[in-house]
Length: 314
Ligand SMILES: NC(=O)C1=CN([C@@H]2O[C@H](COP(=O)(O)OP(=O)(O)OC[C@H]3O[C@@H](n4cnc5c(N)ncnc54)[C@H](O)[C@@H]3O)[C@@H](O)[C@H]2O)C=CC1
Ligand SMILES: O=C(O)C(=O)Cc1ccc(O)cc1
Image (tube, rainbow, N blue to C red; front, side, top):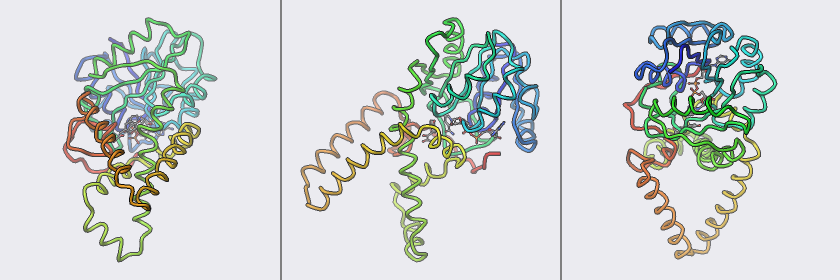
C-alpha cells in the first residue's frame, strides 16, 4: 500500500500502528523517529521498524506516508523540523486526540504538494511507551479523519483504506465537530477521573489508606483512567480548552441538579436519570463499542489486553 511509512513518535499509538503495518504488510519499510535515544533503542529492541533515528527529518525523507504520533504539544517543533524534508505527493497525517489545534500548528509548515489529512484513532489504553502497543488495538474501533475541504479525494481514500486495513471503521468530520464530541466522550471523563483520584490523594493519610484498601470497582476504574500519560493529557487540555470548558459547564450544571436531588431526597429524579444512563450503556454495547465488563473508562477504550506494566513516555 505504501513504499515507506515514517512514524514520528513511537509510544502506544505509534508502536500499535507499526505492529499493524507489519502484520498486514501495508508498507515496504517503516522508519521510526523519536526524540530520545533511549526510546529509540527500546523500539529497535522490539523490532518495530526497519530504520531508527533521532532525526525526524531523516525519517520522513522519501516517505509516502508520514504519521505524527507524539503528544500534540510537540507538533509545532516537529513540523518545523520535518516540513522542508517532506516529499511532494506524500500524505501527512497524525493521531492526536484534538484536531482544530493540530490544523492550526501544522498549516504554516506544510510544503506545496503534501496532502495533510489529520486523523484520530479512538482507541487506546492508559499505558504508554513503545512496549505498550499491539496490532489489535484498532480492530473494530473508530478512526476519525478531518480532511480540509480542498483535500485530494485520492489521498483521503488511501488513508481511509489504510485505517480500514488496520481494522478500524472510518468517519470524516470537521476538526471543530471532532473536538466538541471528543470533549464530552473522552476529555471531560479523563478530567473527572484525574480529579476524583486527586481528591483521594489529598485525603489525610489514615482515610486514604482505607479508601485504597476498600476501593470498589467504581473507584478502581477511575484510577485506570487517571493513570494515563500526564504529558499527553496536559497537551489535550491545553489545546482543546474551549470545547472542554463548554462541556464541563454542562456537566457541572447537571451535577448541581443531581446534588439537589440527593439533598432533598428526590428519589424519582435520581431513578429517572439512572434509567436513562443505563440505556446509553446498553446501546453502546449493542453498537459493538464495548468488549468487556461494565467499566466507566472504556467508553473509548481498547479491547481487553493482558495487564501490561506501566511505562512512562519518553
Ligand atoms: N494514549 C491513548 O490512548 C491515545 C493517544 N492518542 C494520541 O496519540 C498521540 C501519542 O500518544 P501515545 O502513543 O499514547 O503517547 P506515548 O507517550 O506512548 O508516546 C509518545 C511518543 O512521542 C515521543 N515524543 C514526544 N515528544 C517528541 C518530540 N518532540 N519529537 C519526537 N518524538 C517525541 C515520545 O518519545 C514517545 O515515544 C498523542 O497525540 C495522543 O493524543 C490517540 C488515541 C489514543
Ligand atoms: O483508555 C481509555 O479508556 C481511553 O479513553 C483511550 C483513549 C485515550 C485518548 C484518545 O484520544 C482516545 C482513546
